[in-house]
Length: 485
Ligand code: URP
Ligand code: ZN
Ligand code: ZN
Ligand code: ZN
Image (tube, rainbow, N blue to C red; front, side, top):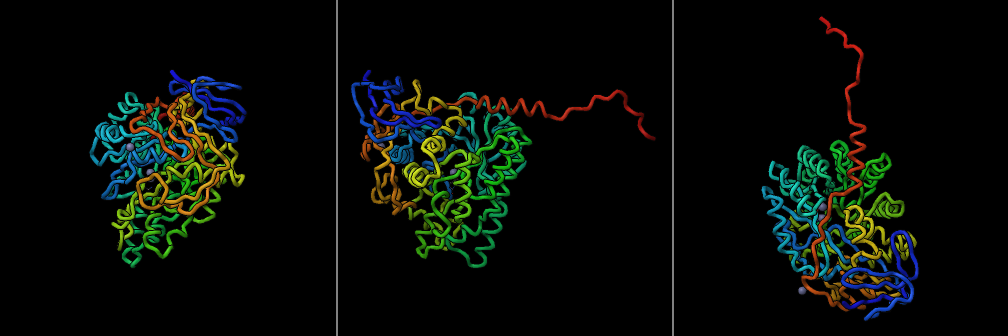
Protein backbone atom coordinates (compact mmCIF):
# COMPACT_ATOMS: atom_id res chain seq x y z
CA UNK A 1 0.00 0.00 0.00
CA UNK A 2 1.42 3.42 -0.89
CA UNK A 3 2.01 6.09 1.72
CA UNK A 4 1.63 9.87 1.63
CA UNK A 5 3.45 12.23 3.94
CA UNK A 6 2.31 15.77 4.75
CA UNK A 7 5.57 17.57 5.51
CA UNK A 8 6.74 20.75 7.20
CA UNK A 9 3.37 21.89 8.52
CA UNK A 10 2.09 22.78 11.98
CA UNK A 11 -0.37 20.23 13.30
CA UNK A 12 -3.29 22.00 14.98
CA UNK A 13 -5.69 20.03 17.14
CA UNK A 14 -8.36 21.16 19.57
CA UNK A 15 -5.86 21.13 22.41
CA UNK A 16 -2.35 21.46 20.95
CA UNK A 17 -0.31 22.91 18.07
CA UNK A 18 3.12 21.57 17.17
CA UNK A 19 5.46 21.12 14.21
CA UNK A 20 5.22 17.60 12.79
CA UNK A 21 4.89 15.54 9.64
CA UNK A 22 1.85 13.30 9.21
CA UNK A 23 2.09 9.94 7.46
CA UNK A 24 -0.98 8.40 5.85
CA UNK A 25 -1.57 4.87 4.60
CA UNK A 26 -4.74 2.98 3.70
CA UNK A 27 -6.99 5.90 4.60
CA UNK A 28 -5.60 6.22 8.14
CA UNK A 29 -3.01 8.33 9.90
CA UNK A 30 -0.25 5.85 10.75
CA UNK A 31 2.50 8.09 12.16
CA UNK A 32 3.03 11.65 13.39
CA UNK A 33 6.57 12.87 13.97
CA UNK A 34 9.66 14.58 12.68
CA UNK A 35 11.45 13.89 9.37
CA UNK A 36 8.94 11.31 8.10
CA UNK A 37 8.98 10.16 4.49
CA UNK A 38 6.46 8.49 2.22
CA UNK A 39 5.93 7.45 -1.40
CA UNK A 40 4.24 10.76 -2.08
CA UNK A 41 4.94 14.10 -0.40
CA UNK A 42 2.55 17.00 0.16
CA UNK A 43 4.36 20.18 1.13
CA UNK A 44 2.61 21.96 4.01
CA UNK A 45 5.27 24.63 4.59
CA UNK A 46 3.61 27.66 6.19
CA UNK A 47 0.34 25.74 6.64
CA UNK A 48 -1.76 24.32 9.45
CA UNK A 49 -2.52 20.59 9.33
CA UNK A 50 -5.84 20.06 11.03
CA UNK A 51 -8.73 17.60 11.19
CA UNK A 52 -11.03 18.03 8.18
CA UNK A 53 -14.14 20.03 8.95
CA UNK A 54 -17.28 18.21 10.05
CA UNK A 55 -20.53 19.94 9.16
CA UNK A 56 -23.16 18.54 11.51
CA UNK A 57 -26.13 20.08 9.73
CA UNK A 58 -26.86 19.73 6.01
CA UNK A 59 -29.93 19.13 3.86
CA UNK A 60 -28.78 17.63 0.57
CA UNK A 61 -31.57 16.95 -1.94
CA UNK A 62 -34.08 17.68 0.80
CA UNK A 63 -37.79 17.53 -0.08
CA UNK A 64 -39.10 20.78 1.39
CA UNK A 65 -41.80 23.35 0.67
CA UNK A 66 -42.88 21.75 -2.60
CA UNK A 67 -39.42 21.24 -4.08
CA UNK A 68 -36.00 19.68 -3.46
CA UNK A 69 -32.90 21.53 -2.31
CA UNK A 70 -30.55 21.78 -5.30
CA UNK A 71 -27.26 20.53 -3.90
CA UNK A 72 -27.37 16.76 -3.61
CA UNK A 73 -24.81 14.35 -2.17
CA UNK A 74 -22.78 14.73 -5.36
CA UNK A 75 -22.49 18.52 -5.68
CA UNK A 76 -22.92 19.15 -1.96
CA UNK A 77 -20.04 16.95 -0.84
CA UNK A 78 -17.82 18.34 -3.61
CA UNK A 79 -18.55 21.83 -2.28
CA UNK A 80 -17.79 20.56 1.22
CA UNK A 81 -14.38 19.22 0.21
CA UNK A 82 -13.51 22.39 -1.71
CA UNK A 83 -14.11 24.27 1.51
CA UNK A 84 -12.10 21.91 3.74
CA UNK A 85 -15.04 19.92 5.13
CA UNK A 86 -14.55 16.16 5.00
CA UNK A 87 -17.71 14.90 6.68
CA UNK A 88 -21.32 16.00 6.61
CA UNK A 89 -24.26 14.89 8.73
CA UNK A 90 -27.52 15.08 6.84
CA UNK A 91 -31.08 14.72 8.11
CA UNK A 92 -33.18 11.71 7.08
CA UNK A 93 -36.67 13.11 7.04
CA UNK A 94 -39.73 10.84 7.14
CA UNK A 95 -42.83 12.39 5.65
CA UNK A 96 -45.79 12.38 8.05
CA UNK A 97 -46.87 8.76 8.58
CA UNK A 98 -43.74 7.34 6.95
CA UNK A 99 -41.63 4.93 8.99
CA UNK A 100 -38.10 5.83 10.05
CA UNK A 101 -36.53 2.84 8.30
CA UNK A 102 -38.42 3.57 5.13
CA UNK A 103 -37.13 7.16 5.12
CA UNK A 104 -33.60 5.97 5.83
CA UNK A 105 -33.75 3.77 2.75
CA UNK A 106 -34.39 6.89 0.68
CA UNK A 107 -31.40 8.69 2.24
CA UNK A 108 -29.23 5.59 1.73
CA UNK A 109 -30.06 5.74 -1.97
CA UNK A 110 -29.26 9.44 -2.34
CA UNK A 111 -26.02 9.26 -0.39
CA UNK A 112 -24.33 6.66 -2.61
CA UNK A 113 -22.98 9.62 -4.59
CA UNK A 114 -21.13 11.22 -1.68
CA UNK A 115 -17.54 12.33 -2.29
CA UNK A 116 -16.73 12.46 1.45
CA UNK A 117 -17.84 10.51 4.49
CA UNK A 118 -21.20 11.24 6.02
CA UNK A 119 -23.64 10.23 8.69
CA UNK A 120 -27.31 10.91 9.32
CA UNK A 121 -29.48 12.41 11.98
CA UNK A 122 -33.04 11.15 11.99
CA UNK A 123 -35.99 13.55 12.12
CA UNK A 124 -39.09 12.83 14.19
CA UNK A 125 -41.87 14.46 12.16
CA UNK A 126 -44.79 12.57 13.71
CA UNK A 127 -45.32 10.32 16.69
CA UNK A 128 -46.80 6.83 17.01
CA UNK A 129 -46.04 3.24 17.93
CA UNK A 130 -44.12 2.62 14.72
CA UNK A 131 -41.76 5.54 15.42
CA UNK A 132 -41.37 4.41 19.04
CA UNK A 133 -40.44 0.88 17.91
CA UNK A 134 -38.21 1.83 15.02
CA UNK A 135 -36.16 4.26 17.10
CA UNK A 136 -34.49 1.29 18.77
CA UNK A 137 -33.67 -0.34 15.44
CA UNK A 138 -32.33 2.92 14.04
CA UNK A 139 -30.04 3.40 17.03
CA UNK A 140 -28.95 -0.20 17.56
CA UNK A 141 -28.62 -1.47 14.01
CA UNK A 142 -28.08 1.65 11.91
CA UNK A 143 -25.82 3.66 14.20
CA UNK A 144 -27.96 6.81 14.10
CA UNK A 145 -28.31 8.21 17.59
CA UNK A 146 -29.44 11.81 17.07
CA UNK A 147 -33.07 12.74 16.38
CA UNK A 148 -34.25 16.20 15.34
CA UNK A 149 -37.65 17.61 16.30
CA UNK A 150 -39.09 20.59 14.47
CA UNK A 151 -40.90 22.94 16.85
CA UNK A 152 -41.74 25.08 13.77
CA UNK A 153 -43.20 24.49 10.28
CA UNK A 154 -46.75 24.03 11.57
CA UNK A 155 -48.83 21.71 9.42
CA UNK A 156 -45.73 20.15 7.90
CA UNK A 157 -42.79 18.95 10.01
CA UNK A 158 -43.78 20.39 13.40
CA UNK A 159 -44.34 18.17 16.45
CA UNK A 160 -46.21 19.23 19.59
CA UNK A 161 -44.96 19.20 23.18
CA UNK A 162 -46.63 15.88 24.09
CA UNK A 163 -45.06 14.19 21.07
CA UNK A 164 -41.72 15.77 21.83
CA UNK A 165 -41.83 14.65 25.46
CA UNK A 166 -42.68 11.07 24.46
CA UNK A 167 -39.91 11.03 21.87
CA UNK A 168 -37.34 12.60 24.22
CA UNK A 169 -38.16 10.02 26.90
CA UNK A 170 -37.72 7.18 24.46
CA UNK A 171 -34.39 8.64 23.31
CA UNK A 172 -33.23 9.00 26.89
CA UNK A 173 -33.94 5.31 27.48
CA UNK A 174 -32.11 4.29 24.33
CA UNK A 175 -29.00 6.43 24.89
CA UNK A 176 -29.81 8.81 22.04
CA UNK A 177 -29.58 12.59 21.80
CA UNK A 178 -32.58 14.85 21.15
CA UNK A 179 -32.15 17.73 18.71
CA UNK A 180 -34.54 20.61 18.16
CA UNK A 181 -35.26 23.33 15.67
CA UNK A 182 -36.37 25.83 18.29
CA UNK A 183 -39.06 28.25 17.11
CA UNK A 184 -42.62 28.50 18.40
CA UNK A 185 -44.45 27.24 15.30
CA UNK A 186 -47.92 28.27 16.50
CA UNK A 187 -46.86 31.88 17.00
CA UNK A 188 -44.94 31.96 13.70
CA UNK A 189 -48.06 30.72 11.88
CA UNK A 190 -50.22 33.42 13.51
CA UNK A 191 -47.70 36.20 12.86
CA UNK A 192 -47.26 35.10 9.25
CA UNK A 193 -51.01 35.15 8.58
CA UNK A 194 -51.32 38.60 10.18
CA UNK A 195 -48.41 40.01 8.18
CA UNK A 196 -49.81 38.66 4.92
CA UNK A 197 -53.28 40.04 5.72
CA UNK A 198 -51.71 43.46 6.31
CA UNK A 199 -50.00 43.40 2.92
CA UNK A 200 -46.53 42.42 4.14
CA UNK A 201 -45.83 39.87 1.43
CA UNK A 202 -42.11 40.40 0.74
CA UNK A 203 -39.10 38.46 2.10
CA UNK A 204 -38.57 41.03 4.90
CA UNK A 205 -41.83 39.77 6.43
CA UNK A 206 -40.18 36.38 6.89
CA UNK A 207 -37.88 38.01 9.45
CA UNK A 208 -40.78 39.87 11.10
CA UNK A 209 -42.68 36.59 11.44
CA UNK A 210 -39.89 34.91 13.43
CA UNK A 211 -38.54 37.37 16.03
CA UNK A 212 -35.89 36.27 18.54
CA UNK A 213 -38.45 35.86 21.35
CA UNK A 214 -40.11 33.08 19.35
CA UNK A 215 -36.82 31.21 19.20
CA UNK A 216 -35.91 31.91 22.83
CA UNK A 217 -39.24 30.60 24.11
CA UNK A 218 -38.89 27.37 22.14
CA UNK A 219 -35.30 26.87 23.28
CA UNK A 220 -36.36 27.25 26.92
CA UNK A 221 -39.28 24.86 26.40
CA UNK A 222 -37.11 22.23 24.71
CA UNK A 223 -34.54 22.48 27.51
CA UNK A 224 -37.24 21.97 30.13
CA UNK A 225 -38.77 19.01 28.29
CA UNK A 226 -35.34 17.39 27.78
CA UNK A 227 -34.59 17.83 31.47
CA UNK A 228 -37.89 16.22 32.47
CA UNK A 229 -37.33 13.39 30.00
CA UNK A 230 -33.69 12.84 31.01
CA UNK A 231 -32.09 13.22 27.59
CA UNK A 232 -29.17 15.34 26.36
CA UNK A 233 -30.29 18.12 24.02
CA UNK A 234 -28.63 19.65 20.97
CA UNK A 235 -30.20 22.88 19.70
CA UNK A 236 -29.55 23.48 16.01
CA UNK A 237 -29.08 26.82 14.25
CA UNK A 238 -29.00 29.02 17.39
CA UNK A 239 -29.36 32.53 15.98
CA UNK A 240 -30.09 34.89 18.86
CA UNK A 241 -29.20 35.97 22.38
CA UNK A 242 -32.53 34.70 23.76
CA UNK A 243 -31.83 31.11 22.69
CA UNK A 244 -28.16 31.39 23.61
CA UNK A 245 -29.11 32.74 27.03
CA UNK A 246 -31.34 29.71 27.61
CA UNK A 247 -28.47 27.39 26.65
CA UNK A 248 -25.98 29.27 28.84
CA UNK A 249 -28.30 29.05 31.80
CA UNK A 250 -29.01 25.35 31.26
CA UNK A 251 -25.31 24.55 31.01
CA UNK A 252 -24.52 26.57 34.11
CA UNK A 253 -27.14 24.49 35.92
CA UNK A 254 -25.37 21.30 34.87
CA UNK A 255 -27.76 20.31 32.10
CA UNK A 256 -26.44 18.45 29.08
CA UNK A 257 -27.28 20.98 26.38
CA UNK A 258 -25.27 22.01 23.31
CA UNK A 259 -25.86 24.94 20.95
CA UNK A 260 -24.96 25.15 17.28
CA UNK A 261 -24.70 28.57 15.62
CA UNK A 262 -24.38 28.76 11.83
CA UNK A 263 -21.67 30.59 9.91
CA UNK A 264 -24.47 32.55 8.20
CA UNK A 265 -25.86 33.92 11.48
CA UNK A 266 -22.37 34.77 12.70
CA UNK A 267 -21.44 36.79 9.63
CA UNK A 268 -24.59 38.04 7.86
CA UNK A 269 -27.25 40.27 9.36
CA UNK A 270 -30.92 41.17 9.00
CA UNK A 271 -30.20 44.14 6.72
CA UNK A 272 -30.05 41.58 3.88
CA UNK A 273 -33.87 41.27 4.05
CA UNK A 274 -34.32 45.00 3.43
CA UNK A 275 -32.42 44.93 0.15
CA UNK A 276 -34.68 46.42 -2.52
CA UNK A 277 -33.83 43.57 -4.89
CA UNK A 278 -36.49 40.89 -4.16
CA UNK A 279 -34.18 38.06 -5.30
CA UNK A 280 -31.36 39.26 -3.05
CA UNK A 281 -33.60 39.22 0.01
CA UNK A 282 -35.42 35.96 -0.84
CA UNK A 283 -32.16 34.11 -1.39
CA UNK A 284 -31.35 34.79 2.28
CA UNK A 285 -34.68 33.56 3.63
CA UNK A 286 -34.03 30.83 6.14
CA UNK A 287 -35.32 29.87 9.57
CA UNK A 288 -34.41 31.28 11.95
CA UNK A 289 -33.68 34.46 9.98
CA UNK A 290 -30.50 36.52 10.13
CA UNK A 291 -30.40 38.85 13.17
CA UNK A 292 -28.81 42.15 14.15
CA UNK A 293 -25.31 42.81 15.47
CA UNK A 294 -26.31 42.37 19.12
CA UNK A 295 -27.25 38.77 18.41
CA UNK A 296 -24.15 38.18 16.31
CA UNK A 297 -21.95 39.45 19.14
CA UNK A 298 -23.74 37.06 21.49
CA UNK A 299 -23.05 34.08 19.20
CA UNK A 300 -19.37 34.97 18.88
CA UNK A 301 -19.11 35.34 22.64
CA UNK A 302 -20.72 31.91 23.00
CA UNK A 303 -18.06 30.34 20.82
CA UNK A 304 -15.30 32.16 22.69
CA UNK A 305 -16.58 31.20 26.12
CA UNK A 306 -17.65 27.67 25.25
CA UNK A 307 -21.39 28.07 25.86
CA UNK A 308 -21.90 27.34 22.14
CA UNK A 309 -20.14 24.26 20.88
CA UNK A 310 -20.21 23.82 17.13
CA UNK A 311 -20.41 25.93 13.93
CA UNK A 312 -22.55 24.43 11.14
CA UNK A 313 -24.11 25.59 7.86
CA UNK A 314 -27.61 24.06 7.69
CA UNK A 315 -26.70 23.90 3.97
CA UNK A 316 -30.05 23.81 2.20
CA UNK A 317 -29.51 25.46 -1.17
CA UNK A 318 -32.39 26.58 -3.37
CA UNK A 319 -31.93 28.29 -6.74
CA UNK A 320 -33.34 31.74 -7.50
CA UNK A 321 -36.10 30.10 -9.56
CA UNK A 322 -37.10 28.01 -6.55
CA UNK A 323 -37.01 31.05 -4.26
CA UNK A 324 -39.44 32.76 -6.67
CA UNK A 325 -42.18 30.28 -5.68
CA UNK A 326 -42.74 32.86 -2.96
CA UNK A 327 -43.25 35.99 -5.08
CA UNK A 328 -46.34 37.66 -3.59
CA UNK A 329 -46.33 35.41 -0.49
CA UNK A 330 -43.18 35.18 1.65
CA UNK A 331 -44.44 32.01 3.37
CA UNK A 332 -43.93 30.14 0.10
CA UNK A 333 -40.24 31.07 -0.31
CA UNK A 334 -38.33 27.81 0.27
CA UNK A 335 -36.43 28.24 3.54
CA UNK A 336 -32.71 27.62 3.40
CA UNK A 337 -29.28 28.97 2.52
CA UNK A 338 -25.97 27.44 1.45
CA UNK A 339 -22.56 27.60 3.09
CA UNK A 340 -20.77 24.26 2.80
CA UNK A 341 -17.89 25.61 0.74
CA UNK A 342 -17.57 28.80 2.76
CA UNK A 343 -17.90 27.78 6.43
CA UNK A 344 -14.21 27.09 7.03
CA UNK A 345 -12.74 30.11 5.17
CA UNK A 346 -15.38 32.48 6.58
CA UNK A 347 -14.92 31.28 10.16
CA UNK A 348 -11.13 31.31 9.87
CA UNK A 349 -11.20 34.86 8.45
CA UNK A 350 -13.77 36.32 10.81
CA UNK A 351 -12.90 34.17 13.82
CA UNK A 352 -9.15 33.47 13.85
CA UNK A 353 -8.32 36.44 11.61
CA UNK A 354 -9.90 38.84 14.10
CA UNK A 355 -8.52 37.15 17.23
CA UNK A 356 -11.95 36.04 18.43
CA UNK A 357 -10.87 32.39 18.12
CA UNK A 358 -7.53 30.68 18.48
CA UNK A 359 -6.61 28.11 15.84
CA UNK A 360 -7.19 25.38 18.43
CA UNK A 361 -10.66 26.76 19.26
CA UNK A 362 -11.35 26.89 15.54
CA UNK A 363 -10.58 23.17 15.23
CA UNK A 364 -12.77 22.45 18.23
CA UNK A 365 -15.86 24.20 16.84
CA UNK A 366 -15.45 23.06 13.23
CA UNK A 367 -14.57 19.43 13.87
CA UNK A 368 -13.54 17.96 17.22
CA UNK A 369 -16.45 19.01 19.42
CA UNK A 370 -19.07 17.55 17.11
CA UNK A 371 -17.09 14.33 16.65
CA UNK A 372 -17.15 13.97 20.43
CA UNK A 373 -20.84 14.84 20.78
CA UNK A 374 -21.76 12.39 18.03
CA UNK A 375 -19.44 9.74 19.41
CA UNK A 376 -17.25 9.25 16.35
CA UNK A 377 -14.11 10.71 17.98
CA UNK A 378 -11.19 10.03 17.51
CA UNK A 379 -11.97 8.20 14.28
CA UNK A 380 -13.13 11.63 13.08
CA UNK A 381 -12.23 15.10 14.33
CA UNK A 382 -8.66 14.23 15.27
CA UNK A 383 -5.10 14.20 13.99
CA UNK A 384 -4.00 11.08 15.83
CA UNK A 385 -2.42 7.79 14.91
CA UNK A 386 -5.30 5.49 13.97
CA UNK A 387 -7.69 8.30 13.03
CA UNK A 388 -9.21 8.46 9.55
CA UNK A 389 -7.01 10.57 7.27
CA UNK A 390 -9.62 13.32 6.88
CA UNK A 391 -7.18 16.20 6.79
CA UNK A 392 -7.32 19.88 5.97
CA UNK A 393 -4.03 21.60 5.18
CA UNK A 394 -4.97 25.24 5.57
CA UNK A 395 -2.82 27.97 4.06
CA UNK A 396 -3.35 31.08 6.22
CA UNK A 397 -1.97 33.39 3.51
CA UNK A 398 -4.17 32.21 0.63
CA UNK A 399 -7.00 34.60 -0.23
CA UNK A 400 -10.04 34.76 -2.47
CA UNK A 401 -13.25 36.69 -2.99
CA UNK A 402 -16.27 34.44 -2.61
CA UNK A 403 -18.37 34.38 -5.75
CA UNK A 404 -21.12 32.25 -7.24
CA UNK A 405 -19.21 32.40 -10.51
CA UNK A 406 -16.45 30.19 -9.09
CA UNK A 407 -18.31 28.09 -6.52
CA UNK A 408 -18.92 24.35 -6.60
CA UNK A 409 -22.51 24.45 -5.30
CA UNK A 410 -25.18 23.89 -7.97
CA UNK A 411 -27.09 27.12 -7.25
CA UNK A 412 -26.80 30.42 -9.11
CA UNK A 413 -25.84 32.75 -6.22
CA UNK A 414 -23.90 32.76 -2.97
CA UNK A 415 -25.08 34.48 0.20
CA UNK A 416 -21.43 35.39 0.94
CA UNK A 417 -20.92 36.95 -2.53
CA UNK A 418 -18.08 39.49 -2.46
CA UNK A 419 -16.70 38.52 0.96
CA UNK A 420 -12.90 38.49 1.09
CA UNK A 421 -11.50 35.46 2.87
CA UNK A 422 -7.95 34.77 3.99
CA UNK A 423 -7.17 31.18 4.95
CA UNK A 424 -7.99 28.52 2.37
CA UNK A 425 -7.26 24.85 1.80
CA UNK A 426 -3.95 23.96 0.16
CA UNK A 427 -4.81 20.25 0.39
CA UNK A 428 -7.90 18.36 1.51
CA UNK A 429 -7.74 14.63 2.09
CA UNK A 430 -10.77 12.42 2.56
CA UNK A 431 -9.92 9.05 4.15
CA UNK A 432 -6.50 9.20 2.52
CA UNK A 433 -7.69 10.28 -0.92
CA UNK A 434 -6.33 13.66 -2.01
CA UNK A 435 -9.51 15.51 -3.03
CA UNK A 436 -8.36 19.13 -3.31
CA UNK A 437 -5.02 20.67 -4.32
CA UNK A 438 -4.90 24.46 -4.34
CA UNK A 439 -8.49 24.91 -5.48
CA UNK A 440 -8.47 22.01 -7.97
CA UNK A 441 -10.90 19.19 -7.19
CA UNK A 442 -9.91 15.54 -7.65
CA UNK A 443 -12.58 13.90 -5.52
CA UNK A 444 -14.40 10.69 -6.43
CA UNK A 445 -18.15 10.23 -6.58
CA UNK A 446 -19.14 7.36 -4.29
CA UNK A 447 -15.91 7.53 -2.27
CA UNK A 448 -17.85 8.70 0.78
CA UNK A 449 -18.84 6.08 3.33
CA UNK A 450 -21.56 6.10 5.93
CA UNK A 451 -20.23 6.51 9.48
CA UNK A 452 -22.27 4.50 11.97
CA UNK A 453 -22.24 5.76 15.54
CA UNK A 454 -22.93 4.09 18.86
CA UNK A 455 -25.10 5.59 21.59
CA UNK A 456 -23.31 8.45 23.22
CA UNK A 457 -21.51 7.11 26.26
CA UNK A 458 -20.39 8.23 28.75
CA UNK A 459 -22.53 11.40 28.43
CA UNK A 460 -25.83 9.55 28.49
CA UNK A 461 -24.62 7.09 31.10
CA UNK A 462 -23.58 10.00 33.30
CA UNK A 463 -26.90 11.74 32.75
CA UNK A 464 -29.01 8.66 33.50
CA UNK A 465 -26.90 7.94 36.59
CA UNK A 466 -27.51 11.50 37.81
CA UNK A 467 -31.22 11.36 36.97
CA UNK A 468 -31.52 8.07 38.84
CA UNK A 469 -29.70 9.48 41.86
CA UNK A 470 -31.95 12.54 41.99
CA UNK A 471 -35.25 10.82 41.05
CA UNK A 472 -38.27 11.25 43.40
CA UNK A 473 -38.43 8.56 46.07
CA UNK A 474 -41.05 7.98 48.76
CA UNK A 475 -39.96 9.16 52.23
CA UNK A 476 -39.50 6.24 54.62
CA UNK A 477 -41.67 7.00 57.69
CA UNK A 478 -41.85 5.20 60.98
CA UNK A 479 -45.57 5.43 61.33
CA UNK A 480 -48.50 6.52 59.20
CA UNK A 481 -51.27 8.46 61.02
CA UNK A 482 -54.78 7.09 60.93
CA UNK A 483 -56.96 8.67 58.23
CA UNK A 484 -59.19 11.49 59.46
CA UNK A 485 -62.93 10.95 59.63
O1 URP B 1 -34.44 27.48 6.75
C1 URP B 1 -33.92 26.41 7.03
N1 URP B 1 -33.22 26.31 8.13
N2 URP B 1 -34.06 25.36 6.18
C2 URP B 1 -33.64 24.05 6.38
C3 URP B 1 -34.55 23.27 7.26
C4 URP B 1 -34.30 23.54 8.70
O2 URP B 1 -35.15 24.10 9.38
O3 URP B 1 -33.24 23.20 9.22
ZN1 ZN C 1 -34.26 23.70 11.31
ZN1 ZN D 1 -31.64 22.39 9.01
ZN1 ZN E 1 -19.96 13.62 -9.62
